[in-house]
Image (cartoon, rainbow, N blue to C red; front, side):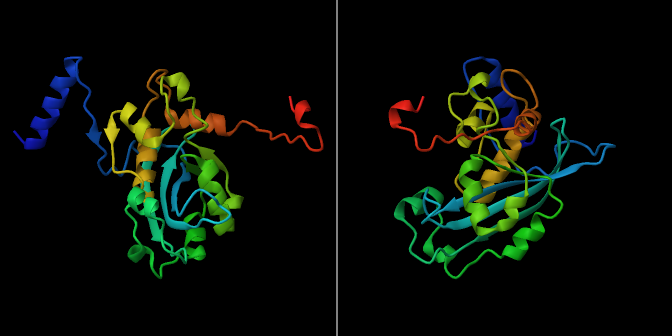
Amino acid sequence: MPFDQTLEESARYLEASGDYRVLRRLQPISRYHPDPEEEKLLGVFVDVETTGLDPGTDKIIELGMVRFEFLPDGRIFRLLEEFSAFADPGFPLPEGIVRLTGITDAMVQGRSIEATQVKAFLDSVALVIAHNAAFDRVFLESAFPVFETKAWACSMKEIPWAAEGCTSGGLEYLAWRQGFFYEGHRALTDCLAGLHLLSLPLPVSGEPTLKVLLDRARQREYRVWAEGSPFEAKE
């Protein structure tokens, strides 16, 4: 019996006992469903690593993107091209960022992300998805204006994770809840983990995760500012 088959049978045996949960390492996946008769849409899952949290002063040091095929019913089909590139921020990387991501000054030195390549990668793409899009989007739209022309969705904020029994919206935690793990905090790896998360049914409702995200992302949102009012009248 092949060794990996023995491991899988052992994992199933442990899970069947009810006393154990087994996490499986995320393996490379190129296709989730066979091709349908309908014409598929193109999406891109994106992730950035940066020197910090402030878009006014911090810089992108790594951009990862994965193009994929999908339908509005939530099915993901083939994972297509991958894009991964470093960018030199022009100053030494903070020690905390090096520890978190494993990216070093030597890895980014003299590197840049070509805007023309990013624009070409997004050609014909109907939707851009990020986990915590409010963070990634502001960095990407500032650096690459093509992102301003695309529809966005957020796999962290636009899926009701709390209603699905999840106490955090963090990608690594959600992966754990859905039974897999991966090496996080690198842009391309986070994209592949995010897409795998979207391919699975939600843990309580069983709804297709991507479909729920697409339905939520289509809803109109409003931002309201109160200007010139005293603080005590803010409510």
